[in-house]
Image (cartoon, rainbow, N blue to C red; front, side, top):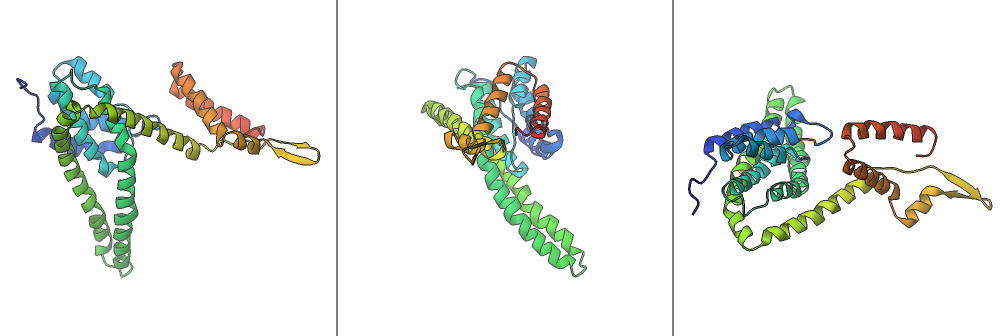
Length: 271
């Protein structure tokens, strides 16, 4: 039994809920929604940690890269709150790195669910209903669009935070005792690498137009590279940037350098 157990209050959860609406307020191209996520977690961090050092470490923990459908994010926030609460009460039984690992593993599947349900379904239905009324000059058109789209999104936020927090509190003890967390961490690492690999192949279209003539035939360098390893140039570019980051090169300098280098290589016809 834990004496003086630290627990989040309803007031804390309400504050986190409202702060989650500012998720996109600090959006940046380096770590995306990380500032908004850390801002939303601040009430929980203040409640659970009394020392400035522990609070700073927790805030830094939640400044890691984060990007998810905003309406789905409260569910992840609830799980993060439950894990932070568990760590604050049992620091020897949970690895703080697992908090970010679980958070990172939920970003992609929750984004897929949120985008397909909210943007691909409810928004289309709401727009159809709203446009049909608006074409007739009825003021209900924009009102219905606003309500039909935002009502399910808001309910998703409310119950997502509530059940995300409750799920985390009830399940983490069993997960810790059964050694499932280590397995989850391993799976998360594998899935994370697969997601990154897929992003490199699909979102980084680096190709070369270089070609040369041999015995009357035109040989394209890109075709040769694709036969050796498909998407070799995006992979090499990613590994180079990763190596430079490991060498503590500033991300701002890297971003500017990549832009300049890409323009130059395109102008001279290499890429």
